[in-house]
Image (tube, rainbow, N blue to C red; front, top):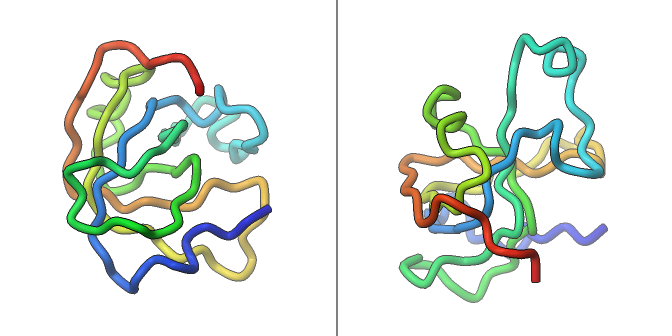
Length: 120
């Protein structure tokens, strides 16, 4: 698996868009035992693209990110919506599994569409 965020400038604030899903609904990701028990939910942005409004461009990004920094209740309202988030890619710890999506520490979120487009 390619490590897309190595080219990301340290602490660069970027804007990305994609389809918001619950982690349990994203193939190839492994929810934690807490999430499987329904006691915690993680949200993943899939089909990620660099947003045209991003101040940073030309860097490698992943196709999916686990969204951090936004209240879970706010994220839950936008499951299966096309959203845009601004923030920073969090460098994964050395112990991170290839089955984990990298974290994206979001500082803002905007809904772009009430539906997700077909994967391309």
